[in-house]
Picture 1 (cartoon, rainbow, N blue to C red):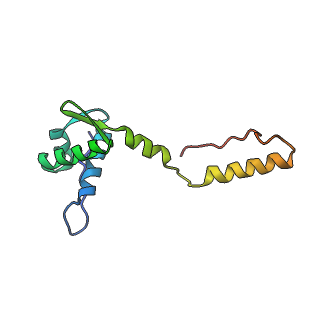
Picture 2: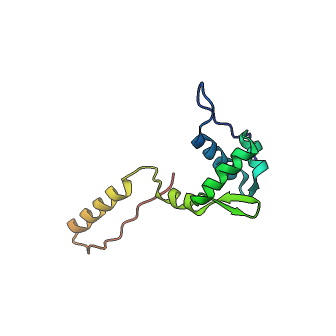
Picture 3: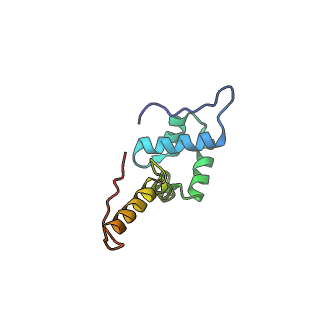
Length: 118
């Protein structure tokens, strides 16, 4: 696993969301399943805190538990699918393609390709 995942807000302790995101990041860095102790050490939080946060994340399907081990859950995948590097770009490009198709006399299903990715 990469360097320890420590998130602190200036002049105050770690908040609940910071702890939860630190655990998610630790799971991402691990790349597979990880145990509570391993995640707690990676995030610099007590084991009991890591367990409590992980169980809340399990209830939200952000994390999956398999026996004593945890991994990233399907809800994170679904949320990630909604992320767009340039919000609205695909919609605007589709409108332009439809307009070009009309001007060229093409059918409304005129093929248009919108690239995605970084």
